[in-house]
Length: 507
Image (cartoon, rainbow, N blue to C red; front, side):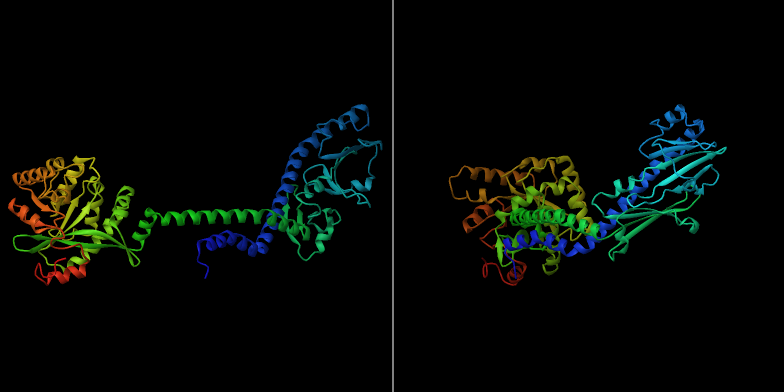
């Protein structure tokens, strides 16, 4: 199978082109129908505009004529207000038989015989269709034996129908009354009516109380035009779309391969797992609790915490990770001793907002005497007042809070004064000063002394030697976490060690 990124990108680029090519027959027909409907809209709009312009104008002009073909009549007929783009000829036939028009000739009387428009003095007919001319609409008005007529410009149909392509349309105008069937006007290419690919639409109008119908048809040439336009525009646009999809895939792939993207995938795929490092009472070797340490198993590989913890914290992804981790820990705790507690690390956002409170509430306040929380000093708590109120609300439900890595980051003694903290964990950085001349050993002693004075429980982290255990024991620090007893381990190993005495299987 094609799985290399380059081949996938090529496929993504070509996919829209392939899909577009396959859908061309459907798209061509839909586009042809769209063009046909759009052209009908143009025709309707023109006819509406013409009707509005002519209706009042004709009656107004007829009322001003003397019907004597005088200079006044000729001037009135040639007046641009009446002799406009909608009218090709205006003429009069007086009751005395005198005739004149804007082009010097008049139709015979028989041509003026047409259908009378009800409730008006107007009649409608069509001019004869000769070899090199098309039939046009002829409107006449009769009063006291006088007649004024207007031959409406018939070239408008060809003007409108010649776009977007020549000979692409065929239009017929007719009255639905069978007695008026001879009054039919045709425009465009009549061969379209014989083509198998013909598509047609029709609209009816009864504005004059006589029902008329316009039928607009299109055939091979419009289909060819639509197909050509689809290819001219569709192929490049689908190729551009494919390129954009390919670029998007490339960027997404790079993002997903970045540590932040990989973390998001790991959350989705449930790749984060808890490891447990026992905390031992050095006086009797009893395991009293565990710190939950976050581990990331990506396939068959383990990702070092140093590679993702900081990114997870700065991007806020640590929040869903912690929720996922807590749920797994709750499942594991059913297999631990009831007297052993488990401590889970938090960040400032957990207590600066209601995130942790809402999570525990949703979980129905699970194991309040066994679950404890450690607040890291790596990111400062900005709203200590809100955090203190939140911690108090949670302690009322039975949960306890520790300060992790005490003395190495933000907060320190300020947290002890302003937050309801039950214990502190002395960082390995200070433990390593035991049996050295490092000045930080004095800080270690000061931390221990201050905690004893304020009745704060102390846990020593990162303890690696028995000498360090003895030093801490002499100063009243009995809760030890470190390689001197155990390394972090999965639950299965924890359960094995719980069956063995301390020292027989220590790591």
